[in-house]
Image 1 (cartoon, helix red, strand yellow):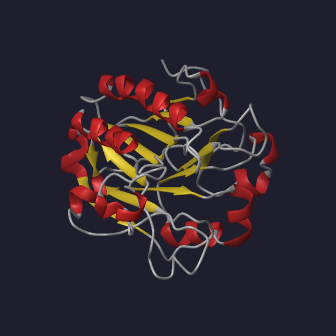
Image 2 (tube, rainbow, N blue to C red):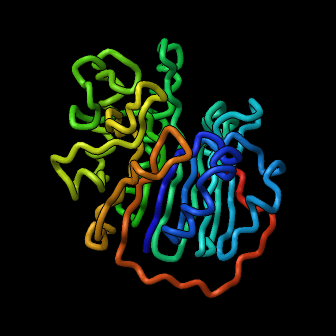
Image 3 (cartoon, rainbow, N blue to C red):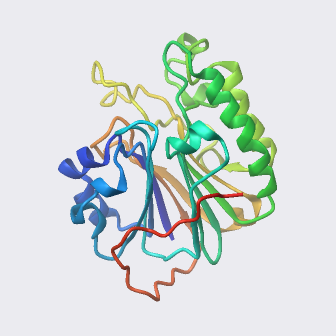
Length: 273
């Protein structure tokens, strides 16, 4: 099974450029998108009727064209949920939880915190609320993916010495990823490639992407029950269309697509817990 995550920085923009060709070439079983910047009502058949995939999305009700997440999946989930009980986080449409037969998948777009750090308290509060939830799922087969907006270690930022006091790499933020790992979650890429420097986000300036001067702020975490099934973790710097690149995992799981996707608005539950 191949699962890919991608902060597309606008679903309409990426559809105009690379997405359909990229999807066909990669043929993933599940694709998790972040920062879609669109409400479901704005996503016409061009976005919703992709052969072989169900579409589920969660968009911001607080500010139009902001945040939002979506999942394209060939496997119909048993249940889809959208709320965490964190008011602003929920209103910004930053989470989808899909329950499948063999695992639970969370797709997150965690707040950035802002360059001037005015939203760092909000970001840290989100992590404070998330960690007990993650702890309650730690003994289950769970996948966490998305844009976590934190680079965890010095390996995860090209110019780490110059960014130690900057948003996404402050000690307080980095500690949140440490806390998650301490609960038993495994950073799949770092598990497979302990010393490799590879990034998922590059600022739009000075050909930084071409020179691979970036940050690793997008992740796949899995719980210990899934670790024996992890075959590989990968990143795709060459896949264009956003300031982020796709990343993915391969799991030794049998894929069963018993039903043909029905193109309609996903029926989701209002609350996760």
